[in-house]
View 1 (cartoon, rainbow, N blue to C red):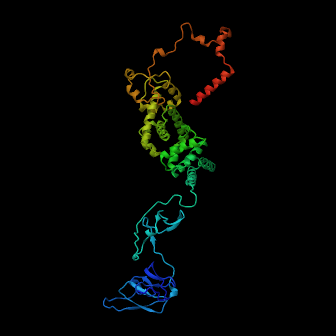
View 2: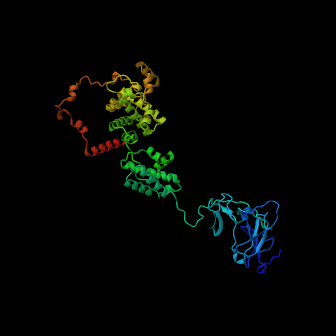
Length: 502
């Protein structure tokens, strides 16, 4: 084949890979020549049935058909049995721009390949998967024949795209998304716009802290939710952490870590909310009357004094107490209603932990019932419902008697013998210990030595004398009872400190 262009005669033919295949292109005049025939032409790969639409083939004729083009007046013979049609065109219609093949990424099959300048070097990178693609590693989606003499291996080498490949500085993400989460949670809780702004400001104030470096976006969003929780409790909104966790689907450990961060970073820790004020919020779906909620709050206060609420889910405690109060209002009809059925009828969440916790509450109430002033024998757990009103009324007295200081621990054998002697060993073993978990208090039988006895030379009437004079006491004895102003201030400070510790 002659290496000269038939149009201009220059020896400037180059082999290029166009969309139609390998062709010869003249770099001087831009003519496109077929590599086999050396004719000025454009290869059009076209299906025979689509091109010769309407023609019929009887299978016996091998005649050639002449095809006349719209842009030229030359006719080129074409074989009907071939799927390749040659169409001629004048030079002014020939495209002189090089047409690149359709390239795709071998990793994700994406075709969004762009050049990026990395370390003063242009590198072809796939925008979809973010991996480097070398020049010799491009894969075409069209069939082609490698150029003669080329020894390209066509191997694939992938490398992760650097995090700081772009010229723009790295900007930490998560703040804007967390603010949107704060606004969404506030809207679902129907909080005022003022409280929403306070939660956003609280999050923005603690966000620049160095503890946020390297924190995940999920933890940042959870921290924003905890800001809403803290602001809501500061402003008296009845809210529990479990309600927040239902609105924001995150793991429990994220909420725990977020609350610890708020306590460590912020000057305002999450305020404590009295348990007796939460029944109205937790039992809102049941639409109970105010008298029922008030009675439930009072019984919750008794349970809090009995150390049942420490380290337990407050929602489960309130639901268990509400079930007992609901049964006590009509024992004859409601005694057989289970906790699960009660929760289902009043749209309250039911869990197995709630049922187990209610058993502990029943045992606590049985312990307090046994210490009521007018009872002398222990009460069974099944009979506690009949004494709820008395427990609420005389709860403080029962708690004082059950947790008095003169109750000491007895040896295990002695405790068993004492329980057997009064015939209530089963009741004592079933009742929980009333007091902090670390104290392990036990009940003791009162004896005659516990009664207060006056000296033989002193009468009871002497304690209530009204005609007492200073002359009956010495100056040294009187001065021992008097305190200076400094001593009074020290005593008052000590009393205040003791109240805070309680």
